[in-house]
Amino acid sequence: MRIAGTILIVSMTLWPAIGLAQIAQKPAGRAGNPAATGAKGLPAAAAAKTDTKKDPKTKAATAQPARDLNGGVSLGERALIQFDLAWIGAYNGLITGEANDKTTAAVKAFQKDHRAKETGTLAAPERAQLAVLSKEKQDQVGWRMVDDRVTGAQIGLPTKQVPNSGPGKTGTRWFSAQGQIQVETFRLRGPGTTLADLFDQQKKEPAGRHVEVNLLRPDFFILSGMQGLKKFYVRAEIRDGEVRGMTILYDQATEGIMDPLVVVMSSAFAPFSGSGIAALSGSPGQRKVEYGSGIVVTAAGHILSERRLTDGCNVIEVSGY
Image (cartoon, rainbow, N blue to C red; front, side, top):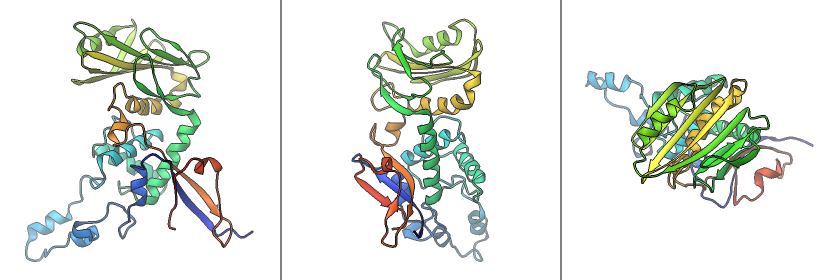
């Protein structure tokens, strides 16, 4: 049997395709960069042309590289890029969708690891490759979004690491067989409940906590550090006098797996409706785009791929066809 070549398949379920699919389907500029078009649809290089002989100041200005190399990408798309970069360990920070130097540096690190030109901007094939690597990482830990009926929050869980569950003090607890990894939700509501008070309490309790990172904002806070011999992470958010949050506790021996996971779990956590990365992406709880590869095995165009890639899909797109 003659193998004609390897192709990329993008499959989408009945839910609206956003973020990754939009990036993959955008027509590329001359350099294959989906964001490399300028005013009036011209390539960026052509759009930037000026008569530098007449105006030396213009020449100096156009010679400066753009600070935000992903500025042409929407907020939701950047959030998903940050999310996937966090999965592969290239991005460590809040997933907000904001264009910043940390995101650009993470993209460059990803490109360097894959021996691509370090532009800080993802061309369509690179974006697809990143999505595939992220999905592989998610499959390895059994990533799944779970509705916590006790607190009303939605939480992303590595189900292979925490296969067991039970009641928590004010929420639900998920844990590994020997308790090396523990995840627990909590919910607090009562007269005088404030985020600042809980923030101060969580820094001290339980006893023995050593806080290394603390971030307090008007509507949420983050704490992380050491709790005895374990690493801990707390995220909480307040709305209408009610605080909902989660605590992650894990052995240092598992930090190779858990450190990147904590970043994505924090941003995927949706304590209230309209929060979390799903809200940033513009389609809460509905994103479902799968990337995979296949091999063209016949001249007629038959493609060999995994069945799970196409099961339940409403749209199947083959890159380049």
